[in-house]
Image 1 (spheres, rainbow, N blue to C red):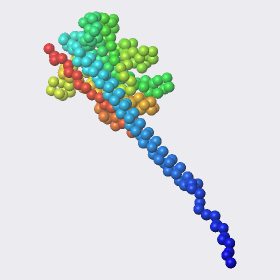
Image 2 (image 1 turned 90 degrees about the vertical axis):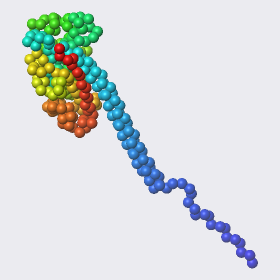
Image 3 (image 1 turned 135 degrees about the vertical axis):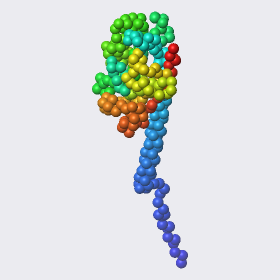
Length: 277
């Protein structure tokens, strides 16, 4: 007798797809990879921004140094050193706001016809606080044409450099309307070193007055420290910089916090004076 065949049992294979655990693991791996990718992108962007900031600082510094050395190489030294009212080259005079070095002199500035294109010029660093009480610094240029009544050429009997004249002709950051006298912001220190023909600084140290000094400089080295604008926004007080102004730009940079040290650059140039007659 033939027995009827039993129907075959249904298959027990699982349907295709991912389990919940597999989805959770894949999500976690994806999140880790995305975090790594974002970190790499952020790091790359930061390095690129630093490189661009350094490029801009170098370009600005090159322009500043060209202006300063041009003015300095046009300095007019006194022909009659016995005349206290004659032209002079001053380094760190008492009238100037001193945040390391400041220098002032008479110079030929081409393009101005009045009284032989002669100007009184000078450079100094100014510190102040902005409207939000944040410390701000700037490299300032003092500039007064010879025809002006405040110059030594117009009135040789009056002192040509005074704090009042500095405030009037190079107010810097204090002039919130025009920023008259400001050459560059975020310059936190200026160093000017005078050298003789033999390369020494003998008799040329600061303070220096060319009318009374025993030596005449043959050249000058100009150096300044420029701080990145983003780092400048993190400064807490003027004293954090001015209390650490040192004999060299390198010493100042070393005194800064670690997060600012990499945001500074030191720039230098040499100016040669016309030989003494």
